[in-house]
Image (cartoon, rainbow, N blue to C red; front, side, top):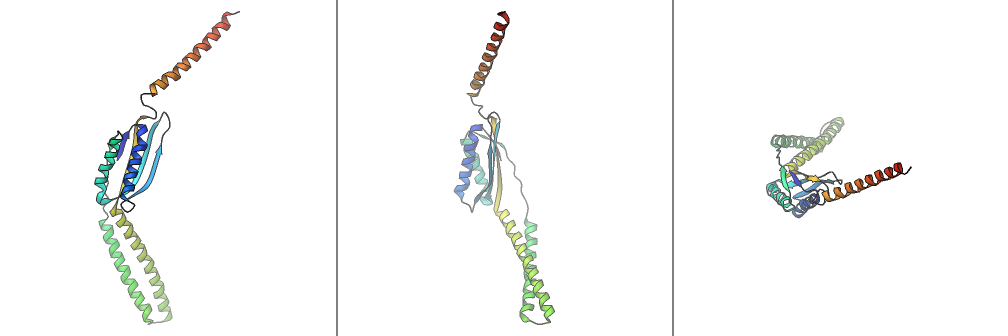
Length: 198
């Protein structure tokens, strides 16, 4: 989501969004990253990345919009990107079952102590490898389940004008220009006086 606000209001909107996330608690909303920057005379910008419970993402987005409206801003852009993990999760589930069955068979061979010493050593080595692959598959499944449970929300804030571009800015610019003009006039007068005196 992209929001446009006055430069001075960006910090307030971003803080309000972080407060909304904190209010939900870490189980339903987490702050992944936050940036804010501006220089006098340039446009201000900020960003906020959140991970929000997918079941409440739509309602949370409405709350984000309300917070920006309260700060005097508007929505500038909005986009939704979906990722289908169903096939990958089915494949990972099948891989976990297969690796678990292999590990169970190897463990049965090791416990029965049937066969030669070389066979038992080979079975133990194969069991260790199967366990490593099983843990890797479980970790991958857990990561995908987290990606399904949480939606990434990327928020960008941009200013409508440069920092310090309120109604007092033209007054400040006029005073600076007046001082410069006065200095140039005094300089020209000194040159004229020096040229006329001889």
